[in-house]
Image (cartoon, rainbow, N blue to C red):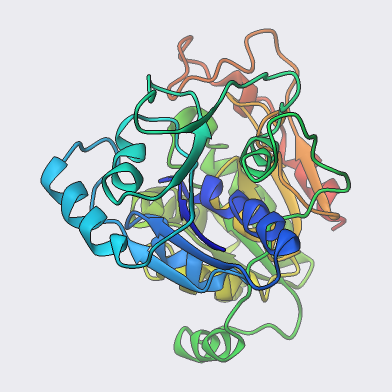
Amino acid sequence: MKHLIVAPAWVGDMVMAHCLVQVLMAQDADAQIHMAAPSATYPLAARMQGVSEAHHFPVNHGELALRKRYAFAKKIRKHNYDRAYVLPNSFKSALAPWLAGIPTRVGWHGEARYLLLNERRQLDPKAHPLMIERFMALALPSDEMIEKPYPLPQLTPDTQRAADLVAEHNLNTARGVLVLCPGAEFGPAKRWPAHHYASVANAALVAGQQVWLLGSPKDEPACIEIEQEVVKDLSHRLHNLAGRTSLLDAIDLISLADAVVCNDSGLMHIACALQRKVVAVFGSTSPDFTPPLGDNTQVLQEPISCSPCFQRVCPLEHMNCLQQLEPVRVVAALGF
């Protein structure tokens, strides 16, 4: 059996898609599993056991680009897939499998995809409250429930590349490493304040650890603020790598961490899939749908009446769900 998974455009969702890969592998050890993913998530497929080939889907998130989709469908048609699993719920995401003539095209109902999907599922949110459940359910008959315990997302780091990055950035892992990830692509309402991260960084540095700051170029201002607020005598053990690493580099560096502090973000899911100790700070969102998945994870939230609001920007302009979550709680969770 040959499968194509049309992957999500968000990093965290892409990591969680590995649960579907594992279900397909368990059903058929000889199955060929390919992924089609946009630029933002395409690199992750290389670190997923069970994915034999990945195809770069050259369309940006939200872009219709019918000519590009047709050209992509023509390209993948030659692989003669038996089934396609369309994980995003948009109409656009189901176009390529339909244009490629894949015989069975599975997905949730989504945006009126009557023609494009011929095995269209109606979602019962109570039956499948977790995103990973919704992904994995597509590999099973519609009346069959997923057996627990669920497989958890796993990423495989490149150990040689990790060693090269340590040398390249003059890093040190000898006394323990805390990785801080202050970014969240969704919006500022998911980002714990930089000065709170700085307090955690100082506690780790006083405890003798190395502190690495990771994130995209968008996270550089927050990481610079953290860098400026650490104790100067200890600042030589803090390394600001924001904007200086690729997504795969971040995977390899996080694999060396003793612990990771993060927001509800793609890097949170990456850290969990690398089996790191994770302390995840939640503000405008809830862990009920996309929690950190792992045996050594802890979610911290501030119980206030307006949270979770699921907004990108705080509608009340105070961010109290994050501002009032004190760094001492994170430090205690880390055990410093």
